[in-house]
Amino acid sequence: MVLSFTPHTISLRRTFSLASGSRNSTPAVLVEVEQDGLIGYGEAALPPSLGEDQESVTSFLEDVSLPAAFMPDDLKDVLVRIDAQAPGNSAAKAGVDIALHDWMGKAIGLPCFRMWGLDPSRTPASSFTVATHDVAALDEVLADGLGFEILKVKLGQGDDRAIMTAIRQRTSSPIRVDVNQGWSRREDALEMCEWLAERNVELVEQPFLKTKMEDTAWLARRSPLPIIVDESAVRLSDVEALAGNVHGINVKLMKCTGVAEARKMIERAHAFGLKAMLGCMTETSCAISAAAQIGCMADWVDLDGAVLTSNDPFVGARLQGGRIMPRDLPGIGVVKKDKRMPEATHR
Ligand code: MG
Image 1: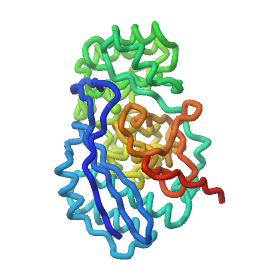
Image 2: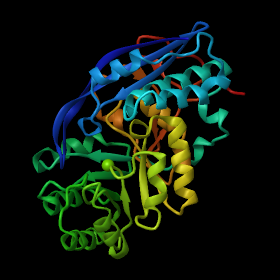
Image 3: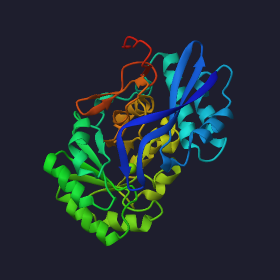
């Protein structure tokens, strides 16, 4: 099996503003594995918060060695070996994980969700991210989210009540709030949760710094809204310690090294009484389509990443009735935009 990769800059439709800063693009590395005339596509999407960049990813991928003749049974061992190659580098690892799953599905002739016996018709609705505190831009931003029935609003930028009030003047859709570690005082956070609970908000994500677990657990015990964590829940090994301290976790392929571990994280979260959101970074339809394979395992889905971009090289999972649905095609169900869409498989 041959591995190749190309740096790619994901352009965003609009400036993306979080508590940690703003950006107009997300660096990425597109990954391909090829064997027996089949190509598996993968992607490492690299928002600054991950701490990886195109150089670190290409350098990691240069050291990855895949079996000359890869068999589907090799997948588990190969992924374990790649994970052990170096600590961190989660997005780089996810790039290979996604490409191998795509290739494997194509080799077997089934969409990944079908290989795993998953039923995409049970996929929950996805939220659409509002990452602006510019009230003047709000109408346009909300128009981008046409077809989504739930919003995810980025708070923690200082003027939280103003942007929430402006959004509520425009829509009554359910809102999930993501603070991205932006709040600091727990009493203020509790007051804010109580204020949000009166405004059709479903949950609050990552209120405090990822290391402030005592404050997070304090808030979770008192908040009228579920408190879930994202930056504090990176990999499978983080899940157990969060049980009893928060209500749920946000699982993302780029944080946890890919689809194989994401499935385990959701299962472990449920085993420990936690709810699981399946989230994403700003990504192309490649990584989004990989995540969409397991959307039906999650309690909440936030897979709007590709909708926020303007130069998606892939066609894949799509918005249907407010949900991001995988295509019924082998592997992760993506096609490069310059290639013809194959016929759907039905078995
Ligand atoms: Mg988040």
